[in-house]
Amino acid sequence: MQKERMDGIESKCRSNSVEENLKLWKEMIAGSERGLQCCLRGKLDMQDPNKSLRDPVYYRCNPVPHHRIGAKYKLYPTYDFACPFVDAEEGITHALRSSEYHDRNAQYYRIQEDMGMRKVHIYEFSRLNMVYTLLSKRKLLWFVQNGKVDGWDDPRFPTVQGIVRRGLKIEALIQFILEQGASKNLNLMEWDKLWTINKKIIDPVCPRHTAVIEERKVLLTLTDGPDEPFVRIIPRHKKYDGAGEKATTFTKRIWIDYADAEYISVNEEVTLMDWGNAIVKEIIKDQDGNITQLVGVLHLQGSVKTTKLKLTWLAETSELVNLSLVEFDYLITKKKLEEGEDFLDAVNPCTKKETAAIGDSNIRNLKQGEILQLERKGYFRCDVPFVRPSKPVVLIAIPDGRQQSVLK
Image 1 (cartoon, rainbow, N blue to C red):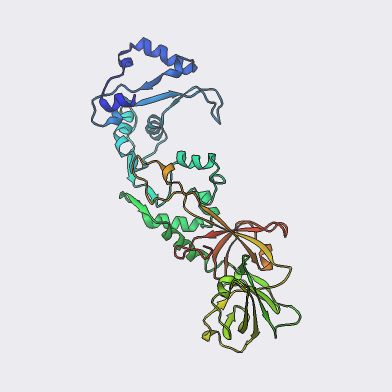
Image 2: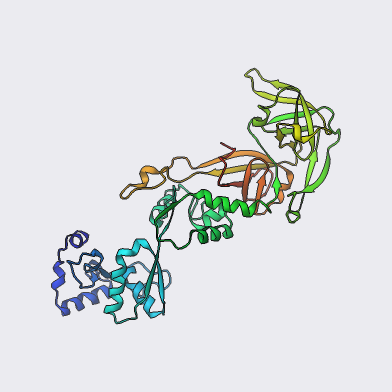
């Protein structure tokens, strides 16, 4: 059929008598074996330069039970035939359609004309395409069926559920769409702009917490630190009271990230965030040259303005929470797939990275869906909240439109 339509060759059934066609139509209604072999086409013009008007298909058989009306019907109108009919019948004045349907507009109007129905005005706009992104439901279904993602709400998916699970606020999406306007130009948008808008919405209000990467974390012993641990209640966001408060524990022995320890020199003064300054007196390494421990003294009267390193840290206590920090990459490796290019050739083999970390005790109070900032590590959305100590809290990294991940 497709080849005949492209080459302007008339179907052998085109010259059927009315009686023959009515007989086959009844077979289609019944969903019989013969009926399933047929489709109903509009008898238009097989030489029309607009190939969508070369005897388009109006009805097809589908014996699969419908999710609402069951097996009552075996025969259904095609999308192209149903839309102009329903739009005119339901009183639609303007049908908003993406420009990919432009070549079918003549068919839309022809159906309304042939059916003697009111003409509906079509308003076209360009489809919003994003880089490294597949929007075809058929292609996305392949990822679901082949276990490449967790489901239709997977944070790697461009579905609304997916990007919300990744930490996008609906108001950011609305703002982004409104900024684009109803352009007719074909555009390929970067994700960065959307995530930058999102960051401006979440940053002023989301609470701050602390985490240290589990791998090769380094213990800093403060020889003049507090003999007994003590707790201070501090704001979860220094500029937004609505974020509430958190309890921070102070002890002689604190954990810091290995990546920070590597930059510290002997006798260097550093700032411990939310505490004050300290001077690192000793750096202990193993036989391979890896830092295993630091020893220092507090220097709380020191100025935070003079230090090069501002360190996040966690007190060594049994109250710390196990975390799994999860990052996602694009599902395909090409910015844009060209016409006829197979998406399977561009599937990204590695799209998910999990990093084990420890977090402050307040993280056990996070609720699913809550957005937070891990100081100096970026923004995250709580995907799996605290259940028990042995099961890590899962935090999904939210892109901010700017930085490459600190976890890589």
